[in-house]
Length: 179
Image (tube, rainbow, N blue to C red; front, side, top):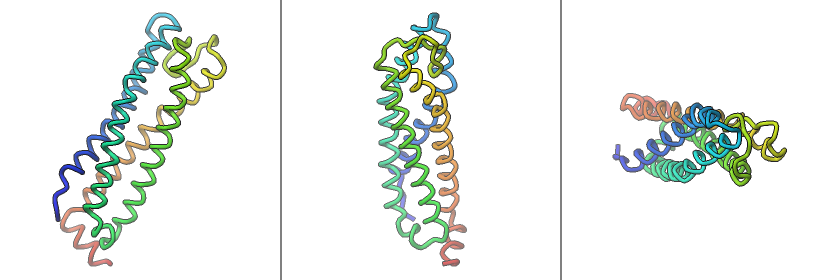
């Protein structure tokens, strides 16, 4: 088996940053922003945090995607020949597409909130009663979606672990023999 250290590293580091950053922001940033003092300060702090995270998240996602393509190219024979690898690859692709879609939608909602400035908020995703209707609706959707991205990327981590187990020599031999 050939070594794919660069693509595996890009895949794993990108995915870990995507997962960890969105989880940390959902757990900590959004809640901590609620302690900024006033409702307007809460919105300003949450916006500043998410706006700083966005370019890092984009780079992480890009690294993950480049690494994923490299892994797929490096393992194309296994995908075609080893039983179970094509199904695992299809599942990873589906989860990645779902995570990308939810991330893009969340970013669009986040832009609505960020462009509104220091929108009065109770936390990063909990609008105050004084928030404009459009912004409050975006925050309400973000309140739900903030957990979907870590769930999808966490599932990708689990499937990637399974993919690594499929590369054990005994698993490769068994998967090839079952074909």
